[in-house]
Amino acid sequence: MDTHGLPLRAAAANVLLAVENGHSLTQCLPPALQQLAPEERPALQALCFGTSRWFHRLDGELQTRLKKPLRKQDRVVHHLMLIGLFQLRFSQQATYAVLNESVEACRALDKPHLTGLVNGVLRAAEREGAPEPADNASRFSHPEWMVEKLRHNWPDDWQEILAANNEQAPMTLRVNARRLTRDAYLDLLEEAGIEAAPTRFAPQGIQLTQPVPVDKLPYFADGAVSVQDEAAQLCTTLLDLAPGQRVLDACAAPGGKTCAILETCDGLNEVVAIDESAERLPRVQENLDRLDLDATLKQADAANTGEWWDGKPFDRILLDVPCSASGVIRRHPDIKLLRRESDISPLAAIQLGLLDAMWDILKPGGRLVYATCSVFPQENHRIIQRFRKQKDGVQLVEPDVAWGRDMGSGRQLLPDPDSHDGFFYAVLEKPDA
Image (cartoon, rainbow, N blue to C red; front, side, top):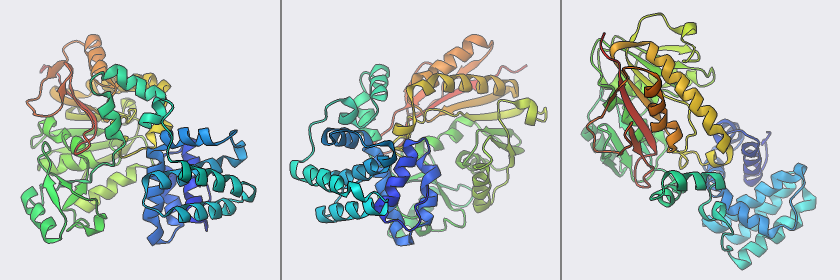
């Protein structure tokens, strides 16, 4: 995907085409941003995230406006028109600028024969206004399978979940407890003119009224705070950490929870952080370095303990498993384009396999916290039920907390438009031998 020298909308259309072909925004947006002038980068990010967020609604409208689908080799122009529709429906951009610049972008993409179509479709869309959504995918701007699955799993909450997913997530910080108190950092933010409030449930969390670049946050570079959603921060409140413990963060990248563990408890014997991804593991080290923290990093498949485990059991294990990420769609709207219903069963098999492997390396009397950023029961409390059926002596701990819903085998947080992401936690203990 070469976006070098392209106008903003053309670069965005190429990024969205890459997403349609199975690449996440996390993968394909950074190289595109690097090829733009710094002042254009926020606009590219906003176009890609916004169009992904409203893709199913915009695509529903565009399909009613096209007499026939574009040829595969012209598919990038389909995405260009979606971007134009996004700006007409959801931005303050002047109509003439949307029309003119979309036509220019079409030429820059080397599709001059389609400039008339782009112009005609966007003019008609402006003139006629948005049509009534024809189906649930358009109405809720989610794939049909996801709407149906949420409706089935959460009959009283599905519409609120879908609405929350279409909101932009707030920017939430985790104050480094080794450096300063939450109140002290709130004072620093106030001095910097940044409006913020403490989070309801995470003891070190702060939510900003408006997002700001991290370099504007007081002492960010010196490790005073990290960016982390409130739901993700809650893992440290469940681990029951104490000095001298050996702790494992399985599936650790990009390292937010590894760092939170180290910040929460001074004097841990060792924290081991494992991730399968060679590309993502350096991010863990960068976060540790900025916060001046130490952990043992290993690149490995956590489930394949024979490859990496030294035979010394762990007192505490955080198992934040690979999942559908259905609870963090508002932060990663491209999940709606990338995820398939057929992904859920294979993910559940991986989750159960990881849980089984981690249980074997947990010390008797030790505690394992199972976590997902999913709202689908198949990946959450049903996994815990299945695991407890096949393993003797797994003790379920009911944490004394004010957040989430008790699912009988763990606690479920649903995405809250004004606060945390969707997350699931279960606390398991191994009987002391």
